[in-house]
Image (cartoon, rainbow, N blue to C red):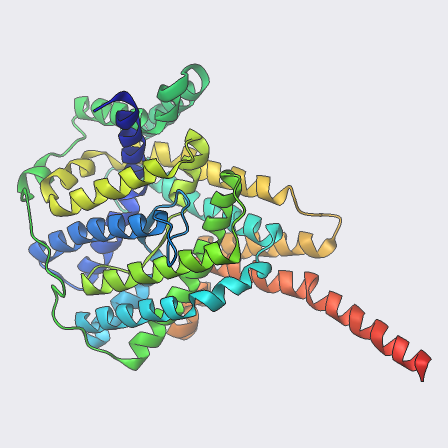
Length: 437
């Protein structure tokens, strides 16, 4: 393998590590809530990694019909966790996958029309959304830095030492290293942190020993899908919410890579996401959406080519077939991952601020749009129980700070920057008509 290919593979692996925790946490939560056996849970995690890789490759492979062609990673959406658990508890696990398949087909069918809504996402909206994404992810990074929410050693000095040590190491690499070493600073930080944790006796090798070397793929592993109307409507709503989140990611990456994202590009991106959701349903995995975690990594590393994402998607596909190899990545202590995540999530916030620098803040409406959107996003993240008594169908829009903040930004932008303009034109037209008469 030549040097260039090795570098591309390393950067791709760094992208895998950046999104790996999120990709694994979702099946762990859903599988645990549905009381899956160890064997079923192991399969669910492995097939999720495989489907993440397939979804990512679909998205970066730009062609006539699908694929946005940006350096974007796809992973299972957190928005679907609650609804999937509720559907599985009420109708059984087969209803989850019936609803996922139908929602994916729905996304494919509306992609052409949904792309026409790009005018509703000017910098005041996209900048707010990207900033909210980063802000709502910071608590995740801090919980990880402390050892993981609910862990027995939460906040122990050893965890904090590892987390801040990794963060400092990454910062020093970005300050003093040059070229490729600076590019893979996150990966080097994660490896160095894991080695340090091993010397402290904080690395558990038992999961690697228990995992099998190879497993075959079984479509419809959990049985033939069933179709419940309420479940289907719920997952369609989840899919629409995911498209809104993905739009912010696509536009942010377009800005980072100096590429204008057209309505046709968005259409292909949405269509690829819909196909990925269908694949998730068939393989009994999850709905898939663009992962914001990797936006910060693209900005931090400065590597904006699709080759690294092709490598990352291919790595995920391989890991999906090799549970034991995939389990090796679980050796990274949560605190180590948290230290690296703080840098990546912080870069997402910084890029959101950069996007907002294009906004005319002499306009009071723009100020209020950003203020209320960010406030809503942070508020729901900090006090999620505020909407606990609302119906389940409405809570899909309010349980996530990212979704609540994004919807606020979209609605307020329409109110302040679109409705008033139309009203003024109407008044002028009426005045002109009166003068003529």
